[in-house]
Amino acid sequence: MTPSDLPRPIHKIHERSPRSFQEASVRKYQELAGKNFYRDENCSQILDFLFIGNIETAYNEHLLCKLNIESIVDISNMEPHQIPRHRKSDCPCTCALETSHPRARLWLGVGESRNTDMLPYFEDISTFIEAARRKDKNVLVHSLEGDSRATCAIIQYMMKYHDMTLRCAFNLVKKRWPTVNMSASFQHSLEMWERKLLPGVQASMTFEEMSRQNAWN
Image (cartoon, rainbow, N blue to C red; front, side):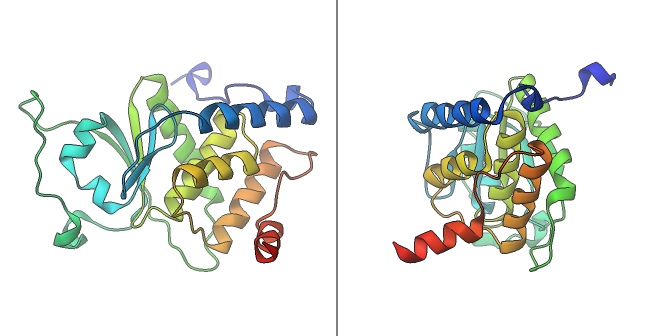
């Protein structure tokens, strides 16, 4: 792979003024929030090609085929033999393809202790997702429950490649996937990611601030 082939942000954030970038981010949020995307109790569509889900989605061959999932980011920290039987679907794929579906997979062992930092994984995750997008492949990002690690992974990708502030990316994912419940360490990782992507620009939000506001509501 040559340097020119390496995934890059869709727009060069540093070449835009903070105000214009934030305004564009809000417009992007409004555009995406108005779309009628797929959603069920185990899975939700975030972008045209990007889905978030839990372990049930990852082990539901019929649904993966229905959603045309060809790439998977697995942050469940579980091997196939460790998945409880009741969380796997017996419903087979019913499409015309007679062989098993080949799917690219990125497996990441990310813990979820109070001190776990996801920042070191962001580049690998966003590169994998963006490479799939460029090949017109649908992507599922999943963790065990889909409410913390997978959520964090998708938000950071949208910040880097889809011109969204942390606030707009978080609000969009929360709207599409209300079960969002990220650990404090992952929230901190996203705040640090925004500082890295937008150096010198005031943070769009902090989770501590959001928690205080919610406490008053």
